[in-house]
Amino acid sequence: MKIAVLGAGAMGCLYGAYLSQKNDVTLLDVYQPQVDAIQKNGLIMIENKQEKLFHVNAALSGTDIGHADLVLVFVKSTQTYDAVKENQKLIGDKTLVMTLQNGAGNDRDILKFAKHENIIIGTSKHNSVTVEPGKFQHTAFGVTTIGTMDSHSQKDLIAADILNQSGLEAIVSDDIQRIIWSKLFVNMSVNTLTALLQTRIGYLIRNKDAWDFVKRVVYEGVEVAEADGTYFDRRETLEMVRKVCIEAGDGYTSMYQDRKNKRLTEIDKINGAVVEQAKLYGVPTPYNALIVDLIHAIEGTYCELPD
Ligand SMILES: NC(=O)C1=CN([C@@H]2O[C@H](COP(=O)(O)OP(=O)(O)OC[C@H]3O[C@@H](n4cnc5c(N)ncnc54)[C@H](OP(=O)(O)O)[C@@H]3O)[C@@H](O)[C@H]2O)C=CC1
Ligand SMILES: CC(C)(CO)C(=O)C(=O)O
Image 1: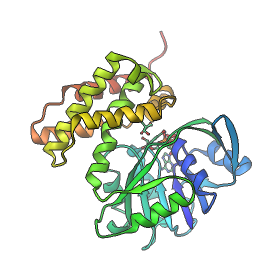
Image 2: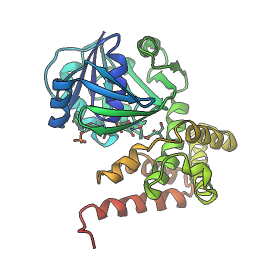
Image 3: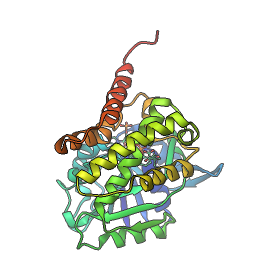
């Protein structure tokens, strides 16, 4: 299979490395030092304290490498539209396009360039951190859950096969709305709180005050999901979030990494999207609205000089 990964960041490298064991994989990124390092030295993964080298192709985003069988989108959700547009030559009539990104609306951005029945959407419970150009650390293992935008297309089964054959455990779900909401519950609480507190994921379940805040944020989300037509039991949902915190306890969320590297976060596509949706149904979301403001205030500090 010819696979192109858009975004050679923490997650693009992780999935690209695993998939390259059975497929012809090219990573496409805008960051020249990353592309150069992978072309020159290959891609190094640190996993269970050991280094492993993968021979993966890398090219600058927009390079024409012809149609791919599968395009995996792993840029930040704020960059989805631009990245897919820039690389639309990869997408033919039969090309599957898969997003495992966080945030709401990635599928809608991809739909402008790919066929409805070829779009696969899902969640990844893996965690990965960029160490330096050409090197990343696989900090937590987890399952990949996928489904299709078109409930009659069974192309999620093909995608699950590709992932499973490369050692990335994948399961298929026929309820896309549940997938999207489940992902939002984790990201709206775990990503934001770890970014605000600058902690590893596991801290959230060890500190009672932090966990209380997670609970309030998630319960608000559950109310919005229900108003939107997808019911979740709030205790079960909180338990699902807790499990992620246990499994990825030693890891750092992508939003934590954004703050550390002074990069804009995906807050508007996560809590921001939930707050906007809540307004449509008149559901109050004070904790999520507060988090959106706090994260934006933090982003504002990036251009301040240190005191
Ligand atoms: N890290 C994690 O553990 C997890 C992350 N996720 C989600 O996965 C997605 C990717 O996250 P992550 O890998 O951490 O993000 P990164 O920021 O590490 O990687 C994204 C990469 O895409 C590059 N990029 C930006 N614009 C383009 C473009 N037009 N074409 C090609 N590449 C581009 C970025 O370059 P530059 O930095 O120069 O902009 C960067 O190298 C996010 O939605 C995130 O929330 C989900 C689960 C876990
Ligand atoms: C919380 C986590 C690690 C779940 O895998 C995630 O989605 C992220 O860091 O963005």
